[in-house]
Image 1 (cartoon, helix red, strand yellow):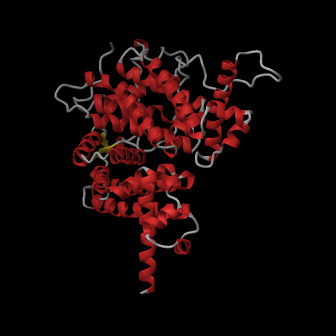
Image 2: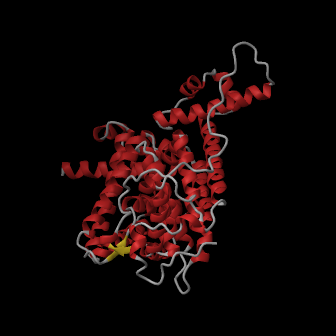
Image 3: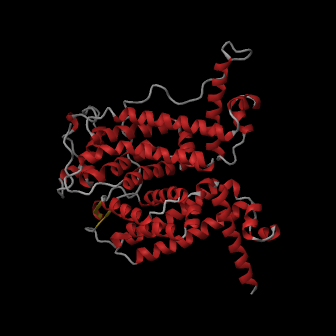
Length: 468
């Protein structure tokens, strides 16, 4: 009886944390809020958990284990080749059946700091491992999606978090769209190249690097400045913004303080509060600047390509290089933004929508009669790219070195087919290895084809679009 009572009280505390976090975010899930939701005393809370974070982690693990059990059942009941689709459908179904728990797991954990992110990423890795084990049962000739499984599952979590936040419950439609999207990457298992985020040789630096590199201005000289008060304020503002990015990268948003930000910026607290109301406003400013910088780099390079595949290659090569040049922005934009509050979360989701504009031209390259990717498929592509950059940012990895080909594959394959996409990527990688080769994106390099190109197309749906 005593064990039953203890189990019930612990479960009430975990449920209370989920409710408190869903209502007030990570910051609002205080011990007082948790015990208020659970209807237990403060001493009872501390019988089970050392602090709020211990309860938060317990809730993540509890909800994830229930989701993972449903994923295991769905994968076990499906053919091995359909494991990823089955897991995706089970994840969507869980969000529909348990919206409060799903919202906590898929959204609020992103705001919980490094330990919560570790738990979130570890749970997604467990789901990916279930899928990969099932894939081993598929024959070498069976077609399965050639995509990075963990990044796709993480992207689906993000997509569901966005819908749960908006109370958009069209989950049946989303499951069908995701299944069709994943099918567009299917290839025989023996030909897979993109399921692992394996580092590749870095392509040459983008020729479309922005003239202005995103960095803080130098401090003003000692003594009374010989510039206008407006220029002084702008100098302080930018130094505070970049100091905020640095402190957040090193300590996380929740642990960042105005005192530490001003120390890194080399200014006093009065100067901080002349330009920003609090650290949230300073974070929002550097997040917005980083997004504008990244979008400018991506769009500027996109319009230099001679055809749509080349535009995608150039756009994301420039984007990855921009992120690489300012790694603190990657942490601000892709790791910490959910910890700040609803306005920043909305900005993150708006930025994902903005990047789908680069995919729209793909509809002009589809073979006749093929089903066009849905709007949810475009969202899934960009969100998977965001998840990849997030994972690289957390690992302090180099996005340009490892990820460009993976990102281009995600973008092109749903429109021109997996075979044509591989042929295109092989050609670009071959050009990168040729010191005196043709300029990337020109007709001069079009005849160089790597191993995938030598095999030739296997299906009519995958011819490479003609050069424009």
